[in-house]
Image (cartoon, one colour):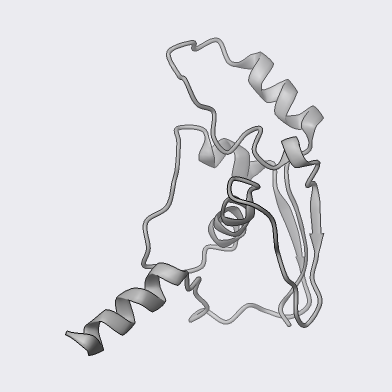
Length: 120
């Protein structure tokens, strides 16, 4: 186990950031508002940690944010916006041990793509 906990931006940090933005040409400030809408501010990890919820509840968003903050490798594309880096700066994490450099995020799309190579 490498990751002990991960802290997402809370509602107050999000609100302060969004209030400072003077640009109005954006329709989306993703990932702002996604996790805070469900009051997800922190994940504490165990040897097995399960994220569950309905479509649109933020599971993939949370994993994508963690992956980017930890600078993990990945193959699959994911949603980003002009404000993604701003959000990442508001996040923090604690580790149990150094994360190996070869660590990566594997998504269901990666698994399906891998399987299709052998089927074709």
